[in-house]
Image (cartoon, rainbow, N blue to C red):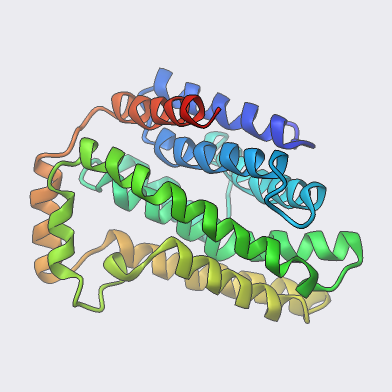
Length: 261
């Protein structure tokens, strides 16, 4: 795909990925449907004046989303993507992995790696201090929090025993402790460090972050001990048809838009 220039083009390209995943019964539609939901809500937030600088937020959204769309295209064309995205896309061929785990490996690659890079690319492009965008960056967390309950409701429909994972909430398992808000906080810290790097040091720092996030992604998939057994039980009762699951996530987006209009 040609890199998008506007948030409307991003939404169109994300919808195309969702439609392709449904047509091919591919698990790639899970993360794309979730991302489409968030992006559409960000667009509404820009239109409603929820950000200090709406046009700048749109630029960030476009730079950020283009990284996922490019990684998806590389995977489809059997080209090499970043290590963290390679792990997430390779996991799509493993039917024993929960829908939640697929979503989490996608969020890991995109938030923990891509977001920090996108923020730095934007401020470098605009010639602005990184701190200028911090308030708008934090405003995204409010949007994510508002969507969380609705997304969990959809996941409970897809995976009726998913709440069993909460039995392990006292463990230090990365599978349980990984959370979108925390990931965004980490992404900001990564952006702060990255913004001070130049040249080869800049590239090396991104590559090291990518390697670290690939390890984190693997820990999300490769559960241990009793958590592995719990994941097995949850999976037994989870929906198995990728196209049906993606339709549920995508239908939720349409329902949300109808309610918010």
